[in-house]
Image 1: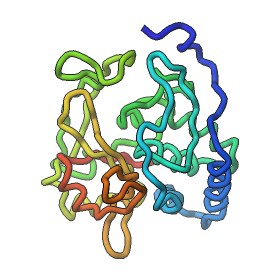
Image 2 (image 1 turned 90 degrees about the vertical axis):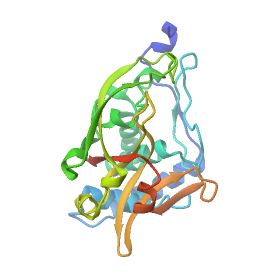
Image 3 (image 1 turned 90 degrees about the horizontal axis):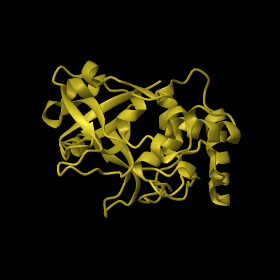
Length: 252
């Protein structure tokens, strides 16, 4: 059980450094200078591009069943989830105060900076407020499959995240073998892509952004692979074939 003191809906101080503040200002300048009429997907591509080469960092957030959640903002290193958090929040913001507010709304259900409210699972983005995207997986492929999952429940009866409840949720994904040219043609630059997993209790194991480039589609992601260890553009079709399937969430 989470101690009462840790469950109080208080907003902790922001953990942020000078380098990150400078990078936020630079990103917002890019965002505010974007051409009028640019689509949300095009804006996400523009903002996410600024992170290319940023070092990968695992377990970037602070908080657990027994440790008070902290609002961490760190552009010096990103993992795959914080990368998407930052890009989504930046796309909605004109200044730093708006960015911090939008980051809280993106990362936490109901905008409450608490471990239990953190969106630990990718499907939380389309299932809990503030809704950041729409699940279009089934719409872009007739080969999509829906599976009933018990998120956070391990096969041995334990949980991945102690203190977090088990959530019953249907997850729709496109098997890798079904991701053909027609499916790729239905994707849009800026779509959020999750790497589906067959493991019980999990929806995806990795996330990133789909980008169509003049030389073909890429999967823009904060990669932990030893050959990368940074934010990179990976060939989309190659990446898809390395995972069981994909889920597709379209930004709102």
